Length: 287
Image (cartoon, rainbow, N blue to C red):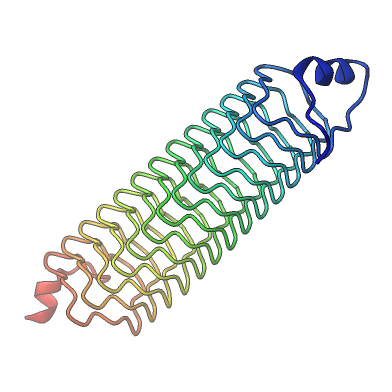
């Protein structure tokens, strides 16, 4: 890390055409609303920096330190943040379209209402992060960690969450339409009233998850563990549940019309008033 640089020096160099600011110490610097698009800030220290509303489009922020920094309303479109240290960073209302965040550490970060369309968050750490109303459509989140993260009303349409860890995460009213969750772990996650229609969720772990009133129309849940899950009033119309484990699950008033249930484990499951694949009620089948 080289010597610190103040705001005037940085902006003067940038205005003169310089773009290389690698490994410089910018701790606590105030860069609100400045234009640093395409700047190379690789491995720079921007801890506690104020970058609210800054233009950082296409900037190289690989392995940068942004701990406790304020990037709210900043434009980071297509920026490189691979491996960045971003614990407790404020990214509220930030534009992170197609940003590279592979392996970034965003624990306890605030990304409320952030735009992350097409972002690469593979292997990123987002434990306890706040992503309320964030747009993550078509984002890549393979092998990412979102333990206890808050994704209430988040848009994850067509997102790839293969092998992601979302244990205890809150996804209430989230949009997971056509999302890929193969091998994902959502143990004790809150997916109440989430839209998971056409989602691909094979071999996932949804043990004790709350899926009450969730829309799982046409979803593929084959080989998935839903042991002890709450599926009260869930819509499982045409869902694929072959070889799924639904033991001790609550499926009361759930709709399973035209669902595929070959070899499903319903041991001790509550299917009262549920509509079964043939259109008959569970009670009539037992009669």
